[in-house]
Length: 376
Picture (cartoon, rainbow, N blue to C red):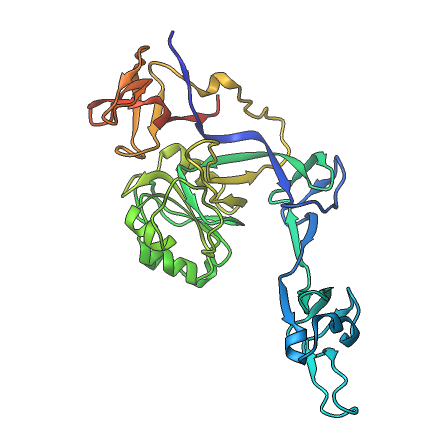
């Protein structure tokens, strides 16, 4: 039987998840292998150099560059407070002295007798990486971070914005086709992960953000509103670094789309439970999906284990389109032609024949499809 492998969107009630928690540059790892961690546990830390400022001491003191070292009143690496005198000339007969004061808190990094300038460095910026989820440390990345393993429910969305957040899940709609409206919001939802149904408007999202909601999980959202929210058109780059305050996880696509019952029911099952959320998304090479991760208590149940066959589509497989023009629509594979097919763009690609819910059959590039991986 013809098969093809494609990125999978996971909706799993119980699976084993591994999370790499890594620093952007070398630092110190604070946990050991087999340690148990909680979401707020700081697992690694480092610091990056502070901003630097150039001060032209020779010009300010009206002296030659090679006289700057003699005029300095502080030493290399000496801590400074804003306003402290860092250099001073001798004046005339001890009078009419001129002084240069530090414009920042920091340290003296360098003095140049060639240019007459000194470099002041602001304090280092500390960076800490937390565990994100509870679990066990299964591997250490020396001076960089570690890998955490946990058993969890995992719900991935098709698109997200905003970075990592966490909180208790609160399902505030009664069905997956119900819109999340502004009258459902209140200040008691600060720090929570709200689950809606089919849609949320831009204004309602903004109101939720004002209430301090940690994240919203919703079936659909308008593309134009997404661009408005970001302040620029959404491209193909990775998301997740946006400073929105409230992360947004879209499970189905653009527009008013009923959340898949499997997704809604799983989130409903964990209503009131703690979850970690990450809106980071990359649809092109190196697929990254936004996620809701709900750590589970230890149980006798065997978690779902996935292998490459779980990402294989064949006739009868349910798939979702992940790019325009039918972004977010779900259909069934009815054919996998072997020869390359010429598309409107004149490119030759491998395609799949997809039958959508309205009965229409369309030829879609296989690279534009993903399957929804569920528990076996």
